[in-house]
Length: 166
Image (cartoon, rainbow, N blue to C red; front, side, top):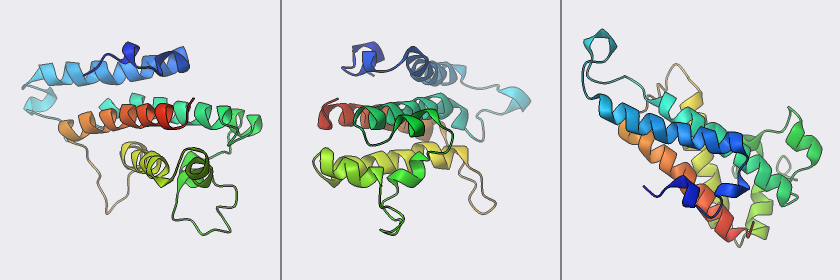
C-alpha cells in the first residue's frame, strides 16, 4: 500500500481528513495483527464497518471540498447542514430533481461519466452501505471488504485529483 503522505493530493486535504484516512489504515493493520481470541472467544468480528468509518468520513470531507473548489456547490452548501452528497451524486434521480446535480457537473467538467460513476459507486458502497442498516439488508462487512472499501476511497480521490485537475 502506497504511503498516503506520498499521494499527490495529500496536502490538498485538511489535517482532520488526513488523520481520518490514517486512522482507517491504522485500523486495517491493527485488526489484521489480532488474529484469533477476540472478545467472546470469537476468531473474527461479525462486521468490520468500524475500519471503514474514518475513511468514509474523510471521503465525505474530500468530496465537499472538491465540489466547493470546482464551484459545483456554494459556500452555503459547504458550511451548511442541508447539502446531501448522496442526493447530489445519484445518477438515478429523475432529471427534474437532478436540475443542479453535482453528478452532471462532474460529467461535464471532468471529462465524462467514468469519474462521476466511480464517485457515486464509492459513495454508495463505501459510505452508505457501511453506515446504514435496514432489516432486510444486513450489509455486514468482512475484513477483506473493509480493506477493499478503504482502498476504493483512496482510489476515487486519486482519480478525482487527476481527472478534475484540482
